[in-house]
Length: 302
Image (cartoon, rainbow, N blue to C red):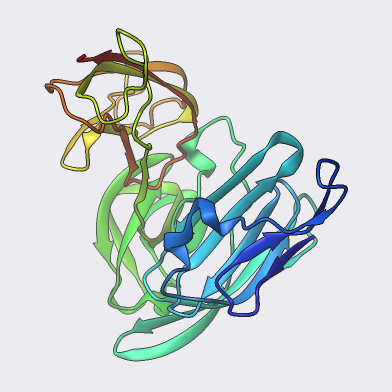
């Protein structure tokens, strides 16, 4: 059983311990206490399928997720933000997975409004044409190519990201509920952009003469990123030095979307020694990105 402690900042799990021969309630937020140190949880909901995730709304409008799969010893926190503030969350059964519904407060055209929005189902397509990775967005499938798409009055005056026929287009401004693309397209997804960031902990590679690499100077010469059906990857040694992976090949149609990439992508780090040894991953485009593994080559200075 997962429960929230009275002050609203500590999440605990109640389970039976054979070692203690009784019930124990360890603190789960000790793994990411910075997420609730200055804020508290106002609402939460449990999404069982397709992944076991507890979604929590913080008092400041941020959304926190806790991926909880105890049988696999997975307890991982993640923070989600949007152009606005989350105010409520619930999960209800859907035809293929549990659906997560939220109330989001946004300021649009100078007016504060509350929208009821549903999280998109987990992406499982074979191509980027059906990828939906925007907030408060709409999808169009008109059957005939066009450049003008209407119905975006709820994002009036906002700059939106556009994925047209699986290819990323330049951001456009919503005017009178309408966006105009530079080139025609049939299948279009348009909505508020967001950036996904990942930073690893300080790497442990051991020392040449035994002991730990923590606190020692170390160098990552290159890293292999193992991907599954992904596009738009950026990787580097800090947030200011990121390399964008070029997935387009000569086999891809000119002007069309490149195929989703599954496999290993190698990045060389042109950097000297430091004491952290961290890897940064970023996705700033409305495209799928699934990182299965990070395999670095590390040298530790003794």
